[in-house]
Image (cartoon, rainbow, N blue to C red):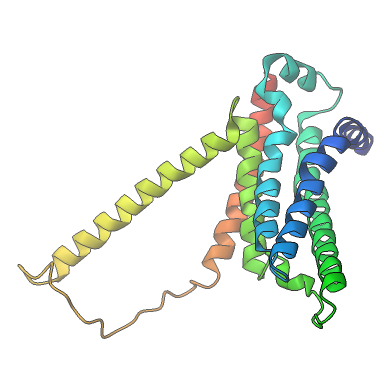
Length: 241
């Protein structure tokens, strides 16, 4: 990979898209968080939800040129390797847009607090921005970036409507998972419980703790992130072919 090519890709992106990112992303988050604070002081939950949705959806906007045949050809003809394009997209999706959204979210919260303070001087509390940050733990951060990785791969893999196809795929996988788990529990209960007592109520007297359950979500998220970005590289190469 050539750092100069990545720099040129970033410059080209900002030159073409900074207004869209500002108006249809950052300003929207700031306005929603500000309005939320004005309606209900010290409650920016709606702004947080909007910020999460915009950040997870952003990779679909980032690779929107791949969803049209003419613009896809133009994008693939840019003098940069597939790896450089994917790495540039990873930087934009995971660092640039996340920091931008969080910055304008904080600005909206502070503006809302300031306006409330002007009209309600009795308010003594100061806004604790950390309270409004949706990253409540290291696991929630990892889960958030896992969702971005899923959307990133879907934006490259699916030719049209990647976000909705991703949601549909996730819903189908969830249905299959619930069905398999329900069937497994039913079969285990049928093989362990006495005949004719399968549908009776029992009082749970023992609890079991799965060893390693604390770190399993971290491992799953890390594997999912690596897998999605690795497949994104491969899919981008296939798209060029």
